[in-house]
Length: 298
Image (tube, rainbow, N blue to C red; front, top):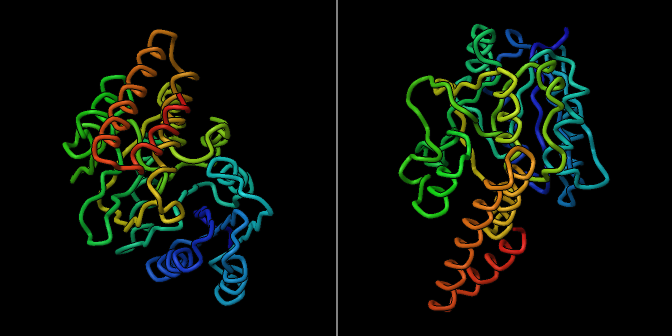
C-alpha cells in the first residue's frame, strides 16, 4: 500500500534517542488507518546508530509501514539531508520530525487529519511541542523583524512570549519549529526545500518566510502533542548560539536591504560585546569564548 505520509527524521550520534522516537511513532500511530513511510537519514553517526536503524528496519517494516534508510558517509546537515529525503519520499504529505521527538496521544494522526482538512487554507502546519516535564515549549512565532530580534537579544523575548510562544488554540503564525513541520511534497519542492546554505538552525524560519511571500500560510495546531528534548545532538550551548548568529546574518543578507543589515550587525555585535564584558567581570570563560566566536560570524 502506498503511504499517505512520509515521516522524515535525521539521525546524528543519537542512537537511543532516535530509537525512542521511532518506537513512539510505532506505538502512537495506527498504520492501518494511516499507512506510513519513515525515512531516516543518518548523518554519518559513529555511535552504532546505523546498525540500530538496520535492525529496526528488519524488525518492524511491514505492509503499512515502509522504512527507508539513507546511511550517509558524511554529515550533510539539516537542510541538505532533509531535502534529499523529501525528493525520495513516496507520500504526497511530508512530516519533518526531529530525532529527539516523542509522539504523544496519536499526535501524528491528529496533525495529519487536521492538515488534510485545512490544507487549502494552510500549507504548513506544526504541532505543540512540550518539554520533558510536559510543560509547553515555545515553538512558533512571528518573523524575525529587527524589533523581534532586539527583543530576542536584549529583552528575553522568549521568556515573555514576545518572540516565541506556545498557543493553547489553533493559530496562524509566521513560523513553526522545524522539529515538527508538515507540508505537501509538491509545495516543499516547488519552494526549493530548505536553503542548503544553512547547515543547522533557522532553516524553517527562512523557508516559511519564502513560503509566506509566495502566499502560503502556516498554522500551529496544539491538539497534536509531542515531547521535544531539544538540542540532543548539540549538547553544548556555544554551538547553537553561533549557528543562530550565522542564521540571522544569512537571513538578512538574503532577504533584506543594506540599512537593515547594518542595524542587524550592530545589534548582534552589541549583544556579543555586552556578553563578553559580563564574562570578563564575572570571570566566565564560557561567555567570553562563546560570544567572541559569535562576533566573528557577524
